[in-house]
Length: 173
Image 1: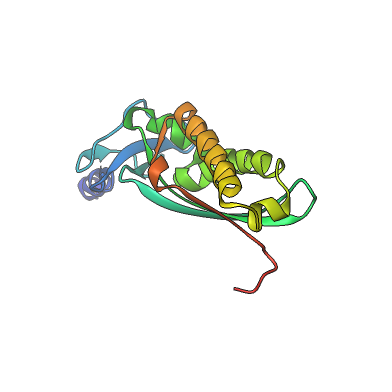
Image 2: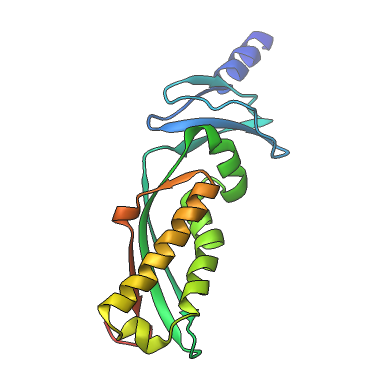
């Protein structure tokens, strides 16, 4: 009985890191081991006490849609599409700040504030029905702010692939 229990525990403690990911080991109290494990690596984790977390390294395409108040106190819908990727050595800090789905966490915590601040500078008509140059200037300012926030949090963003669209939330599609 003891040998079977030991063998079962040994098998359950071996975790393989998925391809295209890096691994972190987190215990039940939320503490991380100070190591980042490569893809394909076999890691030992105590089955009940620790768990293996796979963080994706391949760039993640994220879509973010939210309504914001403009300068004239009307709602405008902002649709953002971007590609995010964590920097490998900073994965533990990124995980602790934003969780396993770091892209969604980053957009909800950091990008939401920056988009809201930029949208407050413009009126509804300027963002939705305004000139192309004005809409591009607003989108460029949001991209610039997102780039700065990504640099601070050690996340790579593909600025050339980032698209931002301003829409009327009450309009029929």
